[in-house]
Image 1 (cartoon, rainbow, N blue to C red):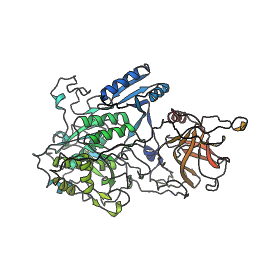
Image 2: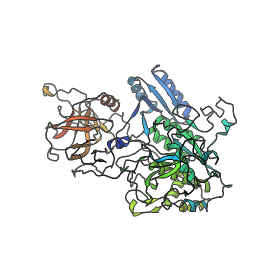
Image 3: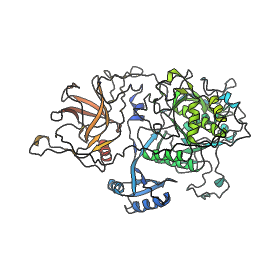
Image 4: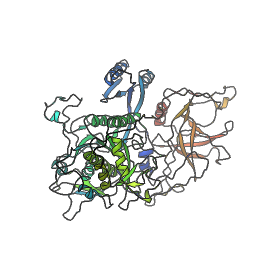
Length: 637
């Protein structure tokens, strides 16, 4: 992920009984919502996985799925099947058809097609060629890449590790890549017949990767992010500012799924990951993410692990703790995933970088990193510029992983990850922020890899624990409840102007609150009072018992808790009147974590349950649409 470094700010939390709390980010609401406000989805698109069955191939399972979808009529279409899996990317204009699929005993899960993105790019000046007095350096931090070159295998020895860059594409005409022979080539298609899928992988003329945005073989970078990432990966093994450029030690496989605005879909990201693994990449770099957990993406990471592929993943740029505010796919726990934070030249955490003592494995330089960008008119070796972000830190680790495999190609993804994490330089500034408390050291890592050339490959078994499906109905016992209490959902307050807990930049105050993501818990219906008992409080909207983490701000008070129930009309949460002093009827603004806009609300008090709630004063179309998605397959209380 990439964004301009910004100074940290703080949030004050005033309640000791809250289930979890954290000091939040130094970002404006626009930036933080890129990570925590989701889920943003591609409307009408879903990912479906068929259940595995002993003795039945993935293709046979997909055939069963295709038949089930064909029975739903022309309103449901299969856009693509993910190569080597039981998953499909479908489009449907009917929520009823999706409900039918979810109920199909052969279907394992159905999830929305979530959007993923990179943050706004921090570009230092114009893209220009390096000057005659420019010295090569990944960073002024002592990562020792140049020292590592002296002990690596010579250029004419060793196999070039293929690194798939799943990003905005690549300017393969840039002198750095063209003259170093760094771009991966699919020999079957290069030597085959034009317009024919010569290798039978489902892609026609995929000579140098694929473009999932427009479904073509032209993966040109129209954003600059992917080309910059590629230059960093190559630069771990050679001087990328020198010209003439020498032969590369690494192959770059460009897979474009992010568009010119840095946005793309989970379906295309997953498809690109399966392509990378099946076409021989041993390292994948993912410098992007979002706040929504995707089981399909988790499946792709697991597939990569089972096939020995290392993945470097950007931790994110919202100055948030990924242990509590997960950024995906960085927060996925597969043993091949290396979540990377960004550090400064002085080896402290970059102000924008996400962190997490459990979820972020290592740090790497990510501030003002010079690398290649697309562009015409620059003299040899082409256009370069500086960018900052965890997007720049992650490819450093990806390049390092590729060089470890160049020294010891038989090692498993788990072993490569262990070597990189074991070769860090530890800094007190990273204690409690990074699981290793360390920033990568290229020399120590390669030195360790050279001692492992005869080590047999070994990987621990991994059984993924998937987060609860949003649509899974509960089997919990019903509990009594009263009507007339406001209903609650995961809330985030975003307040602009004075009086908020966070000061904005350049004199503009902005309140940014991140929600604490908890596993979805659902319970069966609560007993309803008869209309004779509560005629004045008959429910206008169906209520569902959903547990969602939430945060609320009323004036200077900020609370973090969990919802008890949810409807289109409001939400309820379990904090007592004695604990949280607030006036009934008080008007507040709420930010529901899975929406991208605020709602006006009114505080209500349920005397029978002795708990607070919020009644929404403005019910938007987006709220109605999202409620339908959250509660699909559930029974109202």
